[in-house]
Every structure is written in C-alpha cells, then in structure tokens.
Length: 273
Length: 353
Ligand SMILES: Nc1ncnc2c1ncn2[C@@H]1O[C@H](COP(=O)(O)OP(=O)(O)OP(=O)(O)O)[C@@H](O)[C@H]1O
Ligand SMILES: [Mg+2]
Image (cartoon, rainbow over all chains, first blue to last red; front, side):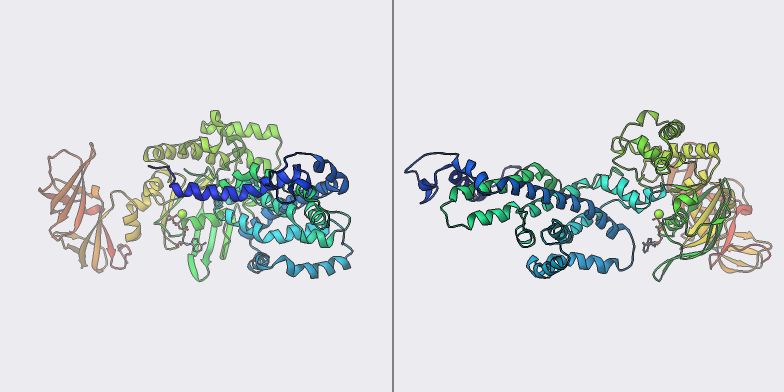
C-alpha cells in the first residue's frame, strides 16, 4: 500500500529516538533528585525522592542568569549580523559583476575547510594588539565572519533558482543594486535567510572555544557549564540544571523553526505556472 | 515618444557574434516588430535597447541622445517580459506602482496613475490580488500595466503573448494594437510568430543570424521580399518554391510550364516563388497539373496540399467549392505577374540587374 512505511523503519526510528531521549531523561531526573540518591546512577530506584533544591541553588552559586543574558545577547547579535550581511553578500556574488568576484568567493567559501582551532591563536594576538580582548566584538566578528562560508553558500544556492527576470524587471523599474536587493530579492528569499538565521543562532549559542579565549567578564552558558563541571564537588544536580538551561533555548528555537528547513529552497516566483 | 536609432551595433559573447553590425531606425510613434527564427538575436537586440545587455560596439540613440551607457530608467524605456516577471510578493497595485514609488512619487499621485492604467487595461477589480491569484492573460495585462503607468518613451515587448493559449493570444494582440493607437508611443515588439508581426506592425524587421534580412511595411515584405528567406518567412501558408531555369527572358519550370520573364537577367538555376493565392483553377498564364494529397477546408477557402509532376510540394488556395478531393489530379493556372524569381544564392532576381 502506498504511504505505508516498511516495518523496519519504525524500529530504526524508534531506536534512534530512545538513544536521544534516554540521556535527556537522565539529565532531567538528575536535576530533580538529591545527589546522594543518584550517586550510582540516575536510573537507580532504591531511594525515590524529588527536590527542586538544585534548581534554586544553581542561580546563587553560579552566575547562571547573567550568563544566560550574555549568551542570548551575543547569539542574537551574531544572528542579526549574519541575517543582514549574508543575503547582501550572496546577492552581490550572484547577480553583480565586479573585479575578482570569483577569487573572493573562493576565499570566503574556503573558510569551510579551515577548522576554528587554526585561526584561534592568530586571532587572539590580533585582538590583543587591537585591545579587543573582552570586547563582544572579539567573538561577534569571527562568529559572523566564519559563518559566511556556509551561509553565503546556502543563500547563493537558493539564488541560483531565483528568476532572473525579476532582477531585470526591477532594473527596468529604476532600481539600483541596493534597492533591488531590498525590494525584490529579500522579500522573496525569506526561507533561506531564516534557515541561515536559525543555524547561526544555534551555532553561536553553543560556541565555547572563542568566548572562553577572548572574553573575560562575560561568561556565556557553554563556558559556564564547563566551569560548573570543572569542580571536584559532588554537583551532578547543579550540572544538570545548567545543562538544561543551556540547551533549552536552542531546542525550542529548533522545534519552532524546523519548518524553515523542511520548506527548503522552494521559490515562490508566481511568475509562471 | 521618441525614435530609436542603432548604428553599426554589434554584440558578441566572447568570440561568438550574436548581432553583427546592425543599422536600423525605429520611427517615432511607430509599431516595429522584430521577427525571425529562434536564436537569431531578437531578444538580445531588444535587451540592448532596454539597457539589460551591454552593447559591444556601435551607437544606440534614443530621442537624439546616445544612451549606450545609460540605465534603463534614463533611457525612458519600459519592458514587458515573456514570462511577465511580476513581483510575487506585491499586489497588482503595488506591482504597477512600483516604478513610480522608486521614482519617488507621492502616494496620491501613484494611486491615481495606477488606477488610470488599470482602467485602460480593464484590471481594476484585480488591484488587490497577488500575481499567483491571476490567470495568464490577467498577468499579462498587469505586466503591460506596469509598463504603461510610467508613460515611457519607448515600449519594449519580448514575445509577450507566447505563454498564452491561441484564443487569448488573438484577443491580446488586438488589445495591444488598440493600446498603440491610443497611446501613440514608439513600440518595439519581438516575436517569432509572423502572424503577430503582420497584424501588429507598421514596420517589420526580419532578422536572421544577427543580421537584418529585410525591413519594411508588412505589405512591402509580403509583396516584394528581397530574398528567399523573407519570402518563405512571411505569409501563411508559406510561399511555394518551384525549381526553374531562367535563361533569355524565359523561365522554364521543372514542373512543366514555361513562364515569360521578360526583363530579368539570366540566372540559370533559380527558384520561382508563388504564394498559394497566386493560382487559379481556370485560366492563368500557364498551367500545371497537381496531384492533390490533402484538402484543408477552412469554410470560405480551402488549401490543396499537392505534388507537382516533378515531385515538388505545392499549396494552392481555392475559393470556390469545386468538389476537389484528395487523390484528384487538378490542373491549376499560374498568375505569372505575381511570381518572384530567386537566384540560387537566395537573392531576389529583379529586372535590370
Ligand atoms: N548570455 C549568453 N551567452 C552566450 N550566448 C548567448 C547568451 N545569450 C544569448 N546567447 C546566444 O545568442 C543568440 C541569440 O539569442 P536570443 O535570445 O537573442 O535569440 P532570440 O532571437 O530571442 O531567440 P528566441 O526566439 O528563441 O527567443 C543565441 O544563439 C543564443 O544562444
Ligand atoms: Mg527571445
């Protein structure tokens, strides 16, 4: 019958789901049980007590709220920067002709193959000389800059299918490149721009290496999480709470915006049936 | 309104020459149609006039001003695209008013002009819709509305009707002709459909391989083509071409009869062009026998598709209902005065050359 999935897909998907759900369940349970009860494992049932003690203490013992705010701020700024600059760059690379366009594009896209670890040290010395250490720009610039590799690639790919006549019609109607971008390209490219925005948000929210090295007074959540885990105390419950707080936002963002990915790159041209 | 002049215009993509040293004047207020087979460079030429394609060599002059390097808006041209190219995220109203908005006109001004354009094209009830909610014919009207709202010097159309069905194509054709009468603007229209060209044009420019094969009024091209290509391209059904030998003022057809060709220089092997309506069932200057393969009945006229004794295909237009059936052998007379002779090179053989 059409539409019926084979029996084995159900099993495969089921196993994958369990693999994913069990650790999450573990973290949640650990966060609401006294550490002594779960010392041998969160699944142990010898002593069943629940407490919200960790959920209250963690805010006091660690600057979790402050970190949450910084993380959100940095991720939001990085996302905004990417959503503004990437479509403009992709549009320029795709529709405008300028000197060494190909070379520039290759250089930018090549950042793909460049692991973060390679740029970390040179960038550190650069920021130190420019007195940018502990300045949000020290992480925002690489967040946005390094994302160009995949984000420009993604949006430019979408523009491959963008009807060229619309660009030409705009030109005939008196638009220069900027107005064409603003009035014709952007309104019809919302789905790749949102996809890029969501990916960039997740990536910058979870960033660890750069903020750890370049920021001092601001401690984003992933960095804080390593600090919470780095102590020798029996603080499994606090770690769990911090982990939940760290992951909950990306999870919500992903669930809310997952349709942007499913929608993919379909162009609504309306130009022709 | 403005005239458009192209002098020695060439266009090449790398080493590939699309338009080859072309000279043309489009008169002020005239409806000019570029027609030619696919790939001959019609769209390229139009896009160069529009400012969408840089001109490799030569000068483009609109309204007395050289505009090779000007933006489309400075040239005062508006263009209607083959696939409409309406902005999908804007309503019809916004689509039509977009160029005015970009030009910085005020809201009330824009609205008045949009409504006036919509009235001209009878699309007022559609103003609040999005392009996706329109039929093909309605979209085409909106696309034309977008052009007329600006009151441009020159209208450019690139095969605007080719996405429409046959019936709609005919009615839109009439509308475009009316629009031209009403506005009196210079219009340049590209098509590969010779019927569209014949019915719309004040002047037809027949193109072939990036060159102008001939230009003139529809009647000039129909009655007096310069070469085999134009003769075969203009007119439907196509002109018949019969093999012949032109020597000493007489034209001996391979199919049998000999026609007088007084005043024509010797050309040896030649082709005689005869349109389907240049035959008569009785009389004529000479006659030949045609074996009828198919009779196409259009009511008022019929077309006999047949074969001559020499095995050449022939189409004959018949106006009376002579009861001719497929399989019959019919004697048809030739109206020799209307025949045209083409040399083997494809050039017309004219008297006194
Ligand atoms: N960007 C381009 N690069 C290279 N060659 C091109 C380009 N655009 C068009 N051509 C070539 O130029 C020639 C003329 O193209 P053009 O689009 O003007 O033809 P056309 O007369 O409009 O044909 P049609 O009736 O099919 O629309 C064609 O041979 C085409 O392959
Ligand atoms: Mg074309």
